[in-house]
Length: 77
Image 1 (spheres, helix red, strand yellow):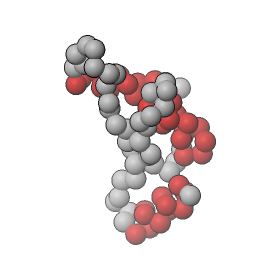
Image 2: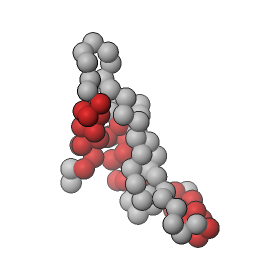
Image 3: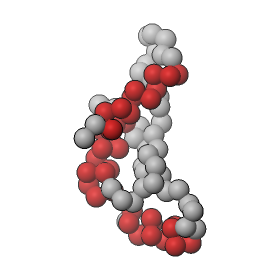
């Protein structure tokens, strides 16, 4: 389904940027969901990675700059 969508979008608008599904609710964080998408055949059907950078819940301050660390495990080989 992702391949079909990607091919259709890119045929209609070659400059379109197709995003991956956004990781949000995995028990181990969004990196697990994004990694699962790519390892289950999504590689090649997204031009950029989408994710919702919700910080860990609320007991301590969470600087906005640290949100990017949530997705860092996805970038590991």
